Image (tube, rainbow, N blue to C red; front, side, top):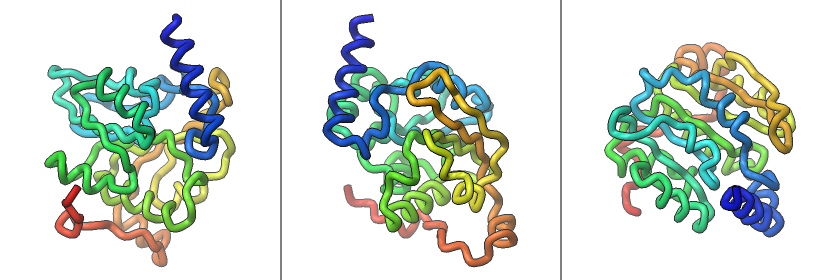
Length: 213
């Protein structure tokens, strides 16, 4: 109980220092975490990434361990939170920059991901970084792979629908603030080209990824 209170106070302090970066005054609730992860067919997921893992509020609900055989990559820009993640989830690969997702896959000897769960709103990125963020996600995710994200104000749907099939959305009211969850799957290349022939998002071949840390 006390550790949970300390975690929330620490998160609040971080938010007050950089509200745009952290997006919320408190970590995600377990109701939000379950809503994000319940639709995932874990028996079909061999590798996944969580973007904006924070204090691990969602990470704790991801199946892990030797029995799953699943590779889990965590991305968190805050060094304190990242250190906490490394300590609590030693079997996961911790990274600091989601805009270098492809590089992290390469360094982990992975080609594509089956699932990406993101706590990062597109609207928190500058326009150039938003394009790069989507490029990294799309080029890292298998066709038909799962992309699951949420936001507090419904603004991402149009942009998400260009690259993903939105299977369903759901408001999670038992979270502060209430969050709108998007359960998506990556469209095939043929679908994207047919529906959006002028799309500016490019797939980055692994051979073109700069591999120096």
